[in-house]
Length: 472
Image (cartoon, rainbow, N blue to C red; front, side):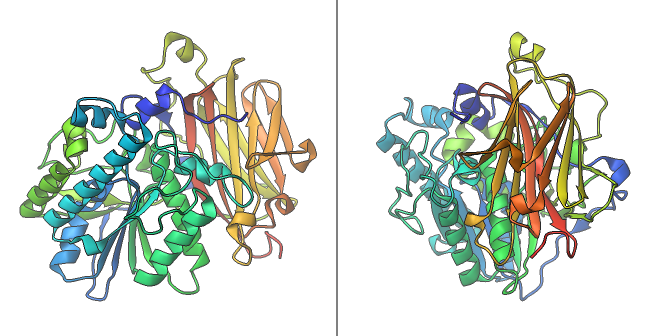
């Protein structure tokens, strides 16, 4: 059975107590020098959509943005991907006992729903401005990976639900399937018709944050003949960031060093009254503020940051485009790993991509040879505008020291679907474009892990094939 990342370590990661090394991005030699930060600017005709993975992310990333939109009288909609019902440590502090029975866990989801309403009121909004989708907290990236089409719905870790269990959600009973997520996001986008979309960042280490970005990207591609809103990803979870931590209302929020060279960041400046109101809105998320106030207050800064990885345009040819981290010489294992886990740690030093002879070629260089128990996964999803995304191939190459297997979601495929070659510290995956459905765009990522313990990963990136590369 394929890995599900469901042991205690992943729960601790969710709670911010276990943070593997997350690597993302591009080698600086392959991209332009970063330009000075520009400012987020509003116009009187803007319509502002805030997409939040969990209740409290809307304030962390966009508390000032929301206040500015309200002050200008702009239409605002906040959409919550989940009810945040999987955060046991905060619930333990709030209830003075763990919420383990599914009904109790769903009850805590409703508590976080009500906290979001209170935070919205603090920022000048009412319940009518909020929409809750109700997909599984800490489960949406699993849906993205494996639960499309004829695959069964995902089962939530703690609520044990396989469909939206909340009566006050947008669509109670919607199955935990990828096409259902796209249906809801498409519905929201069509009905609200935003000009600016603020959403979680693809470089965020929290799985739900990455998943929301990926689902939204696909939904916007499906609607690009109807609307082309500007997209502003905000970062919440990244290793040892923000720096310094804690309440620093006079210190600007700077991007993580690892992401500075790769992204054109934009900033929104907050006035002191807006900063105070943002802090009050964070406090309204009582369950989260009660156990992680220092972390939340790290985002009460004079500015909010937004930026995305550039789309990688691929053309046929022998030159490979490097997408490795390139910001440090040594990849170090996280201190949180045990001594045994640190001894087997394998990270990504380089990632390169090219189109050659009708194949997509993905190459990876590791920080050290794979240890016997260490495995890795490469994900390659194709997109075409003329074909439902649920029916497009979603390839997963799972590899170990000596062997590999190929899947489309959970379906094992023959080895000749693609070619895998390796040396002790390198892996190359050559995928014929027809195996990806002759895509116009490709979404790809990779990770390493020791059993259920995550070790390292490279961010999901959008690849765009130049005219004629992807077939018809």
